[in-house]
Image 1 (tube, helix red, strand yellow):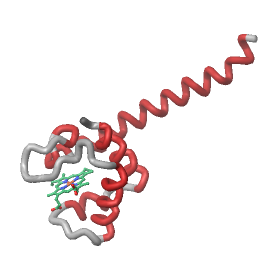
Image 2: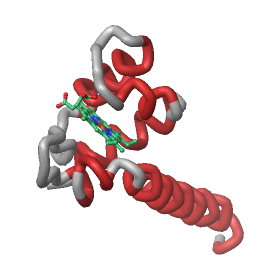
Image 3: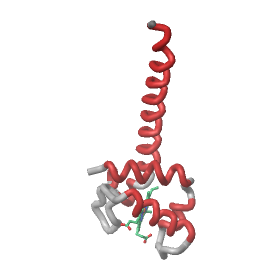
Image 4: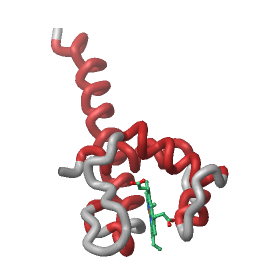
Length: 98
Ligand code: HEC
């Protein structure tokens, strides 16, 4: 009885651990944006705030910076350094900031 539930428990624990690791990764990735976009995306200067941005909008902007569709001063350089997966993580992270 107990043994039959073990695999499920393992899967749940593992799922939680990966979710937490991704949370940390996103915060770590986002910390390199803080210099210009403020802590957790709350801009205090001339840059746009990222906190609470719609995730699809965010992903679209990052892709447009990457391929040069959206003209930018610095974001073209920054966006190129991130993979699709990292951009999705960042989009989730900033969309969650209130
Ligand atoms: C050196 C300063 C700087 C850093 C670091 C930086 N940005 Fe930016 N970001 C800007 C500026 C300035 C703009 C306005 C567009 C432009 O001129 O490049 C911008 C615009 C944006 C936009 C568009 C916002 C909107 O409302 O349309 C997004 C999304 C964005 N940045 C994401 C990021 C992410 C994610 C990071 C970290 C991986 C980051 N930026 C790091 C300066 C920076």
